[in-house]
Image (cartoon, rainbow, N blue to C red; front, side, top):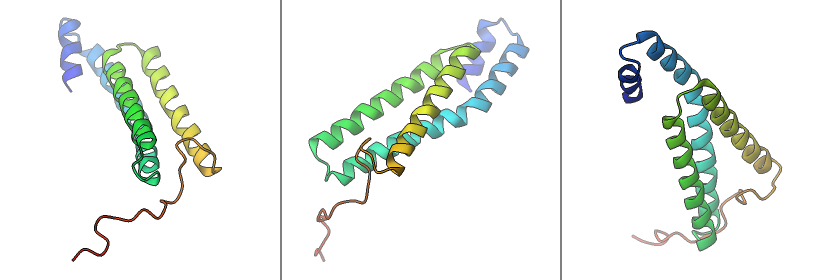
Length: 124
């Protein structure tokens, strides 16, 4: 809610602007956060599927940094068009990753984890 307080100060106490901001962010925020979490989880699953190889971990780190930057932009914008564009792009990205994974195409090379021996196997 810090962004609401900042908006209240920037508008010199205009509560209606803050109210509109909270409604807008409350409506679009779940879509963005769901998309960012889904894409990050897909990259994490892919890294595990690759046995934590350099390429898999690098992709995960790249996705994680991209999602963090999207979140920073989300927190920094102040108009309806920007919020709508970020939310739409985020959901489109999630839809694309989901579609590719469902069709067994290589996005992050999703699939069942390969037989990677766990360090806990055989340990007592």
